[in-house]
Image (cartoon, rainbow over all chains, first blue to last red; front, top):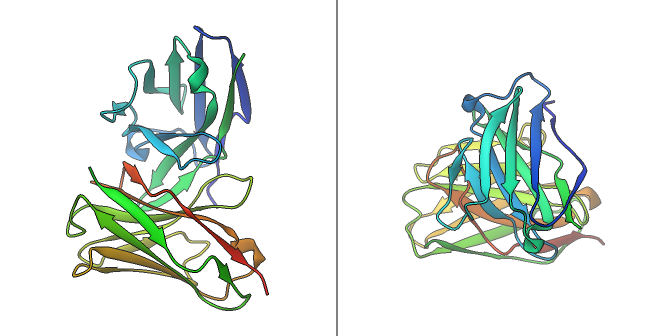
Length: 109
Length: 117
């Protein structure tokens, strides 16, 4: 069974920069895994941020960016705002099947 | 912009079949990929499966034996059936969609389904 691993929690100061990563138990994450990233705040449905590694949706703030980094998918937040405090999930594709990461709880402190 | 709304019973008895419907507005179900995703209370997201309007489906290997996703183009709806449910199937169930099977763009607000006698 494929496992997708994210940092359980990260803390960042307002205005700072933080990178969240997403690793696959099957090996290096590539563009062929079409990494997606989602933000979820308490009591709300997830909101899509990034698709196909680095493509933003029309509503995605410019401070969010996606990339591949050291064999993992990465989500970087530059100039973090207090409203960015949330849970972040990645989603990877495996030939049709899809697997979510366990999520990263980002605290802005 | 596509909007999605889940509907269905909030309580299902163990061993019975969970049935949910997602109503699509602001777009036609005869395009896009239509997915179901769930989230147990206090836990992470789990992909259940998707359907393309042609009827092509893909399911999570761990749920495949119990899941059926179907679409009704005349009603602009798609549905989830999960059989032989147990307490472990208690979760918020979300419907979602995207232009390709490699992306999810829109989410419904989610509906809590509790499995209990």
